[in-house]
Length: 58
Image (tube, rainbow, N blue to C red; front, side):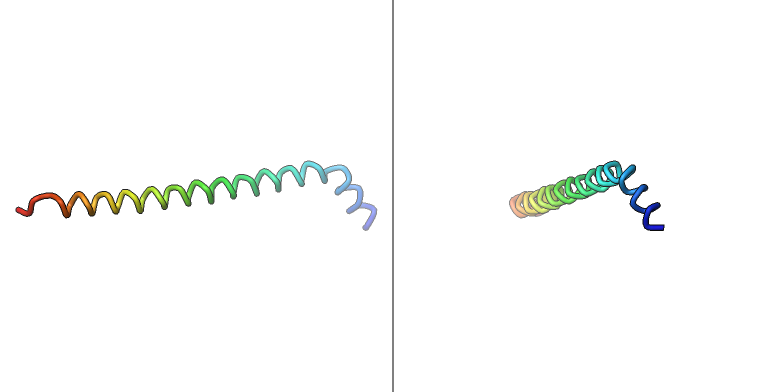
């Protein structure tokens, strides 16, 4: 059994590591994108609040 596990890891190990690395990098990119979108959303909310406050009341 251990020989089979060793053989599979030695044959497919680099590919498995590459896939996990690419998935990890993709998750990190998603986190960075989500953070920027949250920041931009908060800025847009602040700008719209300022604009509403400065518009004349009806």
